Amino acid sequence: MPKNNLEIASPLDPVLKGSNTAIKVDNANGIEEELKKDNILISARADVIRIAPHFYNTKSDIKFAIDALKKLI
Image 1 (cartoon, rainbow, N blue to C red):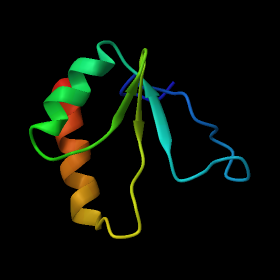
Image 2 (spheres, rainbow, N blue to C red; image 1 turned 30 degrees about the vertical axis):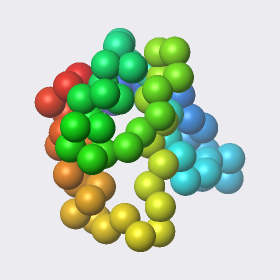
Image 3 (cartoon, helix red, strand yellow; image 1 turned 90 degrees about the vertical axis):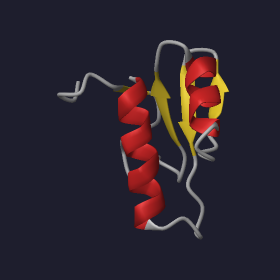
Image 4 (tube, helix red, strand yellow; image 1 turned 135 degrees about the vertical axis):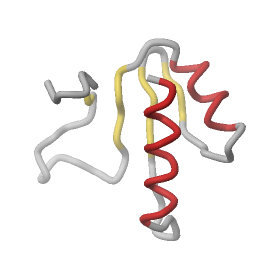
């Protein structure tokens, strides 16, 4: 497991991986609601949040989302 103790629920093999990343978390719905306040849109599914950047998201957008997520988990 990575040093930040996040459990990635998506395939890690590049051959199997798509553009979405699913991460197991406590309180997925609460995290979704908190991130939405900062206009960061993710999907909560049971104990997983799904992050799906699009082609128009910049590196800065992604860093902003990661930094916001770090504050919540």
